[in-house]
Length: 109
Image (tube, rainbow, N blue to C red; front, side, top):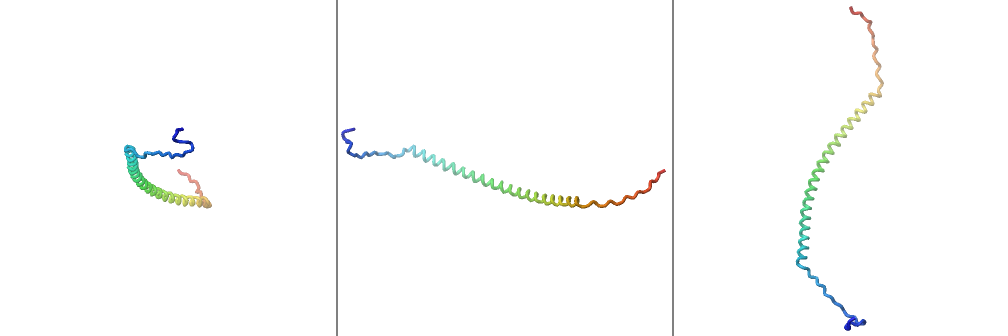
């Protein structure tokens, strides 16, 4: 221990912290922030365009799906009617066959 500071004496130790930012550090930080904001702007624009194109594609797909669903419902309706007709034909009793009259055999000259 030095002679100026005794163990019983409390001295205040003050340190000065230099918080000045160098110019190159400030320019790098501003450049990085500017690059980030500009790239985010263009990325957001491209994303907005992609979403608009996707909405158009989805609307066209929905229209096609609706059309196909309508056609499928119509075909199911027709198939059900045909199956009902087939069941009705199968359940009907067979009509009685008309008697067959035989004519005598004639000899041909």
